Length: 172
Length: 124
Image 1 (cartoon, helix red, strand yellow):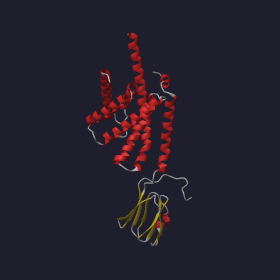
Image 2 (cartoon, one colour):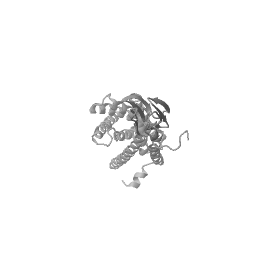
Image 3 (cartoon, each protein chain N blue to C red):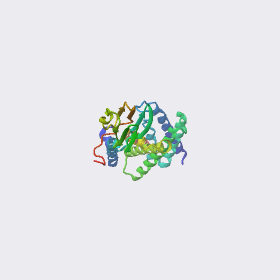
Image 4 (cartoon, chains in turn cyan, purple):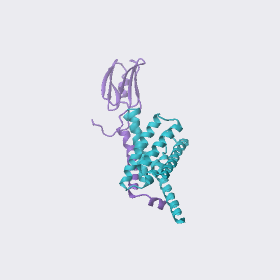
């Protein structure tokens, strides 16, 4: 890996951690509802630099983010770790198929993040199929909603990056 | 960026996936409550002491003091009672609330979420 790429990854990880921290400040109707804005950074990294870089950034984000918010090794940490790994693997698999744009990848990521979290909750905390089933529609709905929001954010960002790199190339 | 450009940035599969997810979400909102195990619990108390705590989803007939209590198809009733009034028997099937037999001091309550309305069950 080149030195310049390392700097870029560090910068992207910093962005992800910042978003991870800031979204906790946004009040939501349900306490555990999160928008998963950090997934915007993960997805951009996946598109620009590939699977390894995106996985690195997700792991850095979850480790440092949980230390900053004081949930390291607690239940939220386990849930975001499992969810993060599920989502990155699913987005990578979906991106290999090459039929999805940013919106589809973001939806896939959100869906599998939630699936991973449900599995983690079921395996680690409560073996109660009933409460898991009650949550499923809510989780699917929220996952779709946040998936669309984050997907749009990725589209905007990618367009902006494209324009910026065009400008740089034109001025050279 | 205009809406048209925005839609141009999505692929056909993106849109299909979004529609599919919306359909699954809608379907799950409708169907998951139907297939939930009926969570209600039947509590049978005699003289303020809890004698039985049974899931309402399991069919069962049990004798309680002078009463015969039947649980079937997510509902409870008192089949027979040795008291003169038999108010509890006349009350019939309940899936929420309580049946109270004062002479025997028996209180049968259904707690938890009431079962959703069902169409046809296995026995009808």
